[in-house]
Length: 121
Image (cartoon, rainbow, N blue to C red):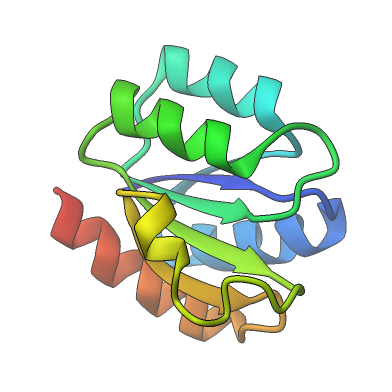
């Protein structure tokens, strides 16, 4: 399974990346919109783990581009913020499949990635 992680915090992104790689997944970690778009122009991920509040770019622009360029790719949004905690994220991003806090246990994230990634294939 091909996973794209778009995370502003490189340390957190590396923790998630290493955990997913240990589960046998092919993972690419980028920190912002430009790098995420460039990656999707070369390779379509099966699933995207996407920081809702990016330092560089817009998470919604990435999700929209993925919906156009990689229509089967699902998106797991992550955040530390309380907005969208009412579930309205699913009304704003057609490819959203989950919404979790950044404190998510890496094993739980891995299980979600595996589940939703298989569902997209």
